[in-house]
Length: 331
Image (cartoon, rainbow, N blue to C red):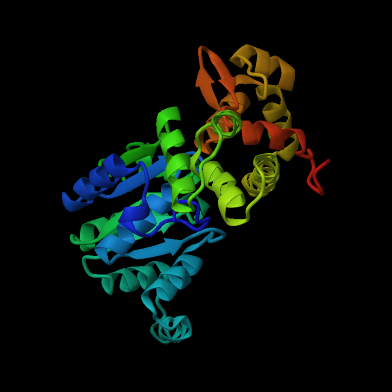
């Protein structure tokens, strides 16, 4: 069902991503490692989970995983390997976690492995591990997803000293649906529940949710599954979406200057040029460059006509409730 809130895992439910699915299949089939990029709620997880299901691969969620030990645990769980036994084996053989992760990948064979939220990995050994996997296991096929920050950016933009120089993954970038495809998505989802929305309701929904598949799915679920009115469903979608974005923003700001990023986002709700934002924040060009790269990499802002702006209407609302130093968001 299109309005199921869980990520899609079957090809016949993967709406509007046929071209991206075919491109992913082509790249993986040619032996490429691939990074699937895009903003939140555009359907990255649905695309890769469907691909894993169709190809008999492995899906590994790395949210909250910082080091190689956590990676080894997540991989073990996906493979059905008892992690405690692996730890005891490592202790007996005095192996490092890089060797442990390599030995786990050796059991994968030629299956596709999706590493979701790979930007979470902070271990300085991770890129060296990937180089070792590339050189050792020719049949291993990896697909990465996540925000374009941290290790994912270093994977895709390696300098000459990087272990992945000349080995960076191919890219597939998912965009929000077009307005026509968004309309078709909603109409087909409503039809699955034998309901027909009013034209004015469709237009308001599309305008408010800006063609992001995830937000459209929430709206459709509230309307058709929970049987809310249009007004109730739209209000509930916006409320739930803001909660989700606030949680993501809190996570994004861990180990970052929260006051600085909060101030930047508040300015960028209305759009600003480089010089306007620099003057407003009172920082130098190097600091501003890092802030903008991280915000763009996380899919929180974009650049249009020389201005940096928050494109997602949900993020614009969430930013008004963001506290500079943590704690509960303001109402």
